[in-house]
Length: 324
Ligand code: TXA
Ligand code: MG
Image (cartoon, rainbow, N blue to C red; front, side, top):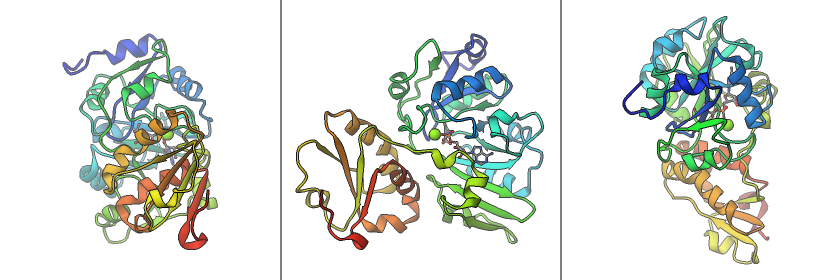
């Protein structure tokens, strides 16, 4: 057991409990890949459909290689460049990775998180750990230990407090299709498309598939149902005007949510800001975003999460001024 760790992961898992794992992106709800009972418990506690596959977290590249049946040169290159860090790679799975983890798919998603406590827990664990975000299905992801404690019972989950998450939104997910030498862009995060294209060797291409396409649904079953929703309805307005002007005629019962102007600061703040607003005694939330954010690579992840979180999306460039 590492000195930095106040808990012994083996003892927690032996007692039939899960670990809430701090990572640089969001907190995860972790269980060893070779404990089907605890893997099943994750789905049960989160209320997550079995069709939604889990990410396997590893403490080393060797551990990642032990979970796959093929490890192409490009996987090695991306892992060396971006791990530990907020990038998940989807590759053909090794036989011992269960269908419960992959939702029956022949592939497995892998990532090495960039957080000292996550790495210490992984190194002290009996096996790699599956870890979905530690939130209830469809709700806001947790970026602080308190967010996890507010939802899960201590009897079920040992929460390891690693402070607020540095990145604040979930990892970028890439699927490696070895036969066609295609990288599929499955979920945006802090690592952007341009970061990835800069690493592509000749012969490989990056394919961005629309989230609503049949291909996207086939490749990531379950993902279409995923949201990052506050409990209150959220209206996002795309506007050149200030939020105060856009929402000037809304009445009482609204709460405006504001984000920092710089993309990585906005990502770090996003779930926390929505969570705080959600806890106010208001009926609706409003957020305003300048149009330039929609086509700047560093904003890809935040815009993607906001699209899912919003119950109303009003782009003033197409629809004219927003009226509440
Ligand atoms: O940053 C993160 O990735 C966080 C932290 C805890 O590491 N984890 C996370 O897990 O976001 P989760 O369960 O909330 O999202 C995992 C998503 C799935 O919904 C699915 O879209 C994708 O990963 N996924 C997992 N396995 C896959 C596979 N074999 N093929 C394609 N997509 C997969
Ligand atoms: Mg999640």
